[in-house]
Amino acid sequence: MKLAAKCAGSYHLTVFRSPDRVADDMIEMVPSSWDGHGARLRLRPPRALTRRQFVMLFVALSGAMWIVAMLGWWGGNAFAPAFAFLHSAIVATALRALWRSGDRGEDISIGPDAVEVTTSVSGAVFRAHPYWVRLCIERDGERISLASSGRQVQVGNFLGPAERRELADRLQDLLAAASGRNR
Image (cartoon, rainbow, N blue to C red; front, top):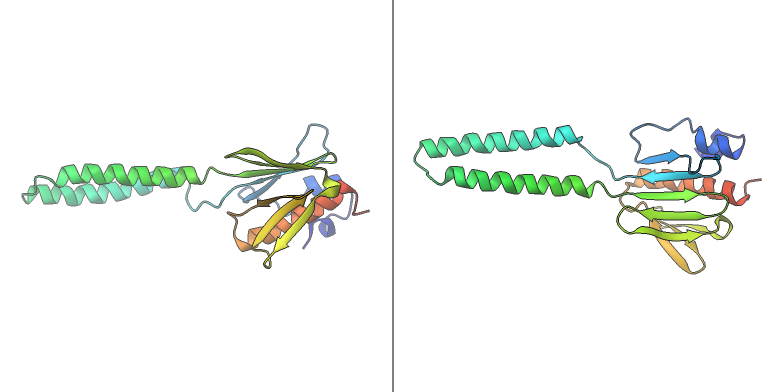
């Protein structure tokens, strides 16, 4: 169901009082400026575990490995603790890299003057007037991009299919409201 259909009122009701917003959404809608014009979509990749759960996972994996290593040492394997330490370091590094890969994200700011896409990795990558921005949905929603004046940027690549459909619906409604095409 489209946001504009849910909130048949003004642009601001459509943007800021979305009834389906959940705190843990991968697509978070926030006001983009102090005067209340426009909106910003903050996209985050899905995370299966919280930071505390990641730490508990590391403790469980390392604890089990150290128990086996100590049993091996008790049985006569003098190198078991050294390999356990090396294994703990590798698991900690891998889990840290996995956690940090989830910190990436995208901000899509849509206002009456500009549409801007900013990534957490490379900063601002796209800026155009909302009237000239086209929403391109390719391969049945597998790729979503914004295009204007020969420039194109893909958005939401790290989202799942359902989230991409939701993103496309929200972008379509917000672009129509920002450019005045929904009147």
